[in-house]
Length: 399
Image (tube, rainbow, N blue to C red; front, top):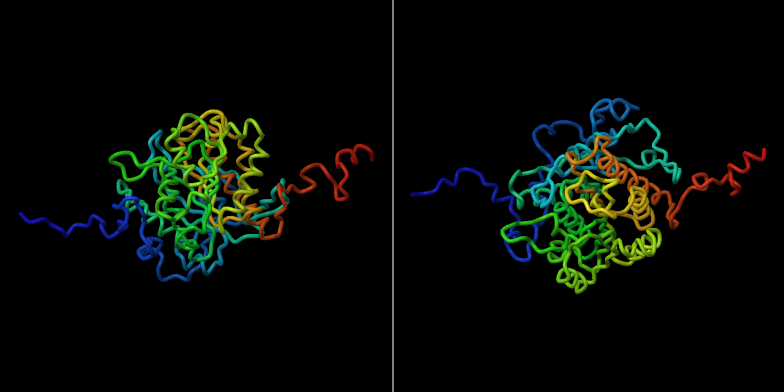
């Protein structure tokens, strides 16, 4: 009996090397999925879907009320510097599910407005919204139940942002998406040219589980084995708990991965270890990508995640680290992953931390553009000094 091949299983979307070992993704951006028949026949450029100075809880919830770009042509016409996009995928999670709702929650939790309102950083006195052209690029296409086709679609979708000259900031989604997202950056800048500073409670360097195509515990191994990002280009911060095992740690050492465990942070202090990580990031590669798993933060600050591990960083640690790397080293991309809204508390503190991490990355990008790149920069006013360097509050008391 013959088979009916007229129906579509999307075989053309599966990257050729995905079924090989080690697995690899495809090449090129053809069929990227960022354009459909809703977005033809109009002049390209950012689309403002909110009124000027609208508050965060009013109107349409794009990230930070940013205008929308829906095609690569929109990005180019708008000369976009930073494009925020979502990847609502959690089919490769092994713990608690729900991270496919992460992009929506990260966008919707914010009380701040967008363009037309001040976004003045009290730490640095830099307003990213005044310095940068930014947009919300919507979400990558997801093929439910099809890991191979989804990951290839993610790679191409992120690739359209990079190809248009913008910095992608990606809202996950489980951590498996870092494989296609970072591969898109490596495809553009050259395999071996991109480094990753990876904040996480877990190393995510495990081999694939039997019978699975990918996992949120394997993206860094896939990036290394595919040749996209060599092990020596990784700097990991915040690892703790009860995995990986010694065999996996040995595998990491053989590939020259640099790892900072919470034990080191607890002994030497976060500021000291962050200095080491920044220094290593500067010498690891030509371009830097940040991968922020929200579970690097202690569950007191980020309960809404799939695999929480007590004893982690504070929210302040996370925000400082992201801003410093973006300002002092410079970034070409970033992801924030593993926000699981069903497990967040009523105050949405996990989603809010992820939201603010994105905003701090934007601030750091703006600082670097302004030339504010000195180590651990804080505006004098933020640390209590007046224009002459005198303690401001003391001066007020003595008047």
